[in-house]
Length: 260
Image (tube, rainbow, N blue to C red):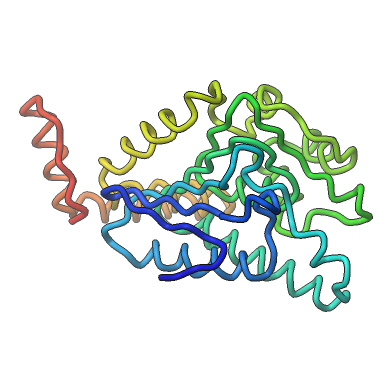
């Protein structure tokens, strides 16, 4: 695949998707959103890819938000369609069935924070800054920020971040549960690579089952969520990976999962 605004790199079962607009602080415009949708759909369909790392190029920003220059001249209908396109892409990321790690090294604002929240795990540099500043533009988050913030951090934090519009530092984001880990800037790549490698070595069917049960089942009534868990548990039990995992445990060795 060839993209204008993305860089794609594979390292074994780990695929890194990098938004490559450093001059715009990796801001999300229509083309970038469309390319991200295509890139994640391709990663989902590729059995060789087990984990995806999402990054932004340059030291200043993961994604600084939407491309304001593009929004400035957009009509109400165009803004609605832009919101829908962003939400569709982020929902694809959220329900991909494969872990997606957001590598957050600088600003993750507006649409950048919304995309980070759609990822499975968020690992941030201690220099990162996150926020939903849309209210300062006379807008509100349009890519799912209000909804995912409530689910991740609770109503109080969602109201604070969206109403005040001020970015927060990485330690505060960790306190709120917005990111899972905060590390020193020079340890970010090593930490992301370590987590990605651990996930890539895990059983893909089990990963998919966990993601579906928590992300999809977790938004449903308890009975529905329990049903997701039971179905995934049963399917995993029929896999070769389950047999390998139990055998390796009994033989006191590391399992080698094949995704079968």
